[in-house]
Length: 495
Image 1 (cartoon, one colour):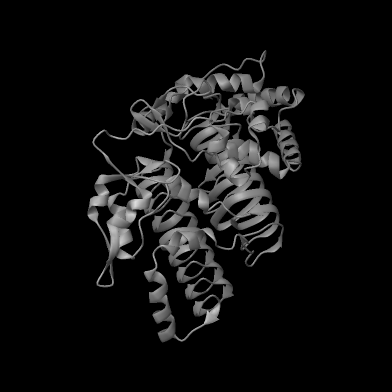
Image 2 (image 1 turned 135 degrees about the vertical axis):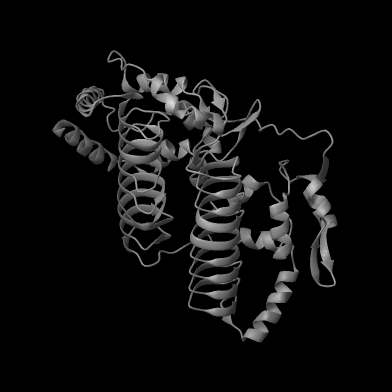
């Protein structure tokens, strides 16, 4: 037991030395936003020899208890990662990742306890979320990212907390009825504003009477052509709110953070990105996308949830005392495991007694220490995702094709093929004006658009679904002019 604790301390110390660029390259490259075709499935995984076969979420969950029978004996004649790759490729993964109980979420990926989720990645405890990324405890969210803590009616917005009816904006906290604005806190009824606090009825940071504001607002919102262009031109800079000793920006209610981006209620962290919770998350080194009521003691982690604690070099984890594992749900004291649920004291998916597990784990850690890999994240040659389809490339697009190929990351050069039904009528995005107009000063969208396929300027195809149509009509919003993934990418423009 003491030997394991010593090696945990060594892992922590080594993670303190990770550069931001290496952190992004190694960990964010395991978070893909794209979807790929696998015969009858749309899958989170592209087809390649780094992943086994893909099955449906239901089939995976129905057979999840059987994964304990997929265990592999550990071969000390090979490295840890060579052993682990064999186990990883022996598992049939679900086409999407779901945790807990969700309803009408078959087109959502990394979903927990949510309803009516469509083409959204990473969402929990939410309802009616479309074309979005990283949404928690919020409802009626469209084309947005990083929306959490009881938000409602959010459209084309990035990084918003505790807010209501926010459209085409970024970096909004505790505010309502905001459009085309950035860096607002405790504000309401603001348009084209930046860096305000406790203000109302403002346009371009100038205060108006309520009557004059509403008159000018009506004129502005009548020009639907400006909506997307105004969003693209928003201030890319953000600020920290109620944080102390924080380096880097848009870190809320946090303290003692080095290299922190877009995190909320975090204490004592380094290299943290997309981390937040209802209570404080603390002691985090090299952590991306950790969110729950609280997380603690995470070191080299890509996605954890539900109060996870003491997680080392792992991905997609809900649990405690986990090392080098992938996609575990409510597990504890596991090393080198894949896909398990409600299991404890497992190594390479085999159950052991508490004493046996500690003895074998110590031997494996000893070998990894001698091989100088005990503190390493999962190597690039195991990563099944196309680097340029992942969050790593969205965070930092300076990674060149030559750089990632040299280090054995996969990269997609071909366009993703989209199967368009032969009967579908294609509408060019430039012709959307034929399907939306004002009629007696009331905004109208022709319901016939629901039967069409839209082609944007980059040649990407997308559809308008009924839930989206109803939202656009209710709030007087124009039809989107970009493919849904391109809309998400706009939220990552923070440089």
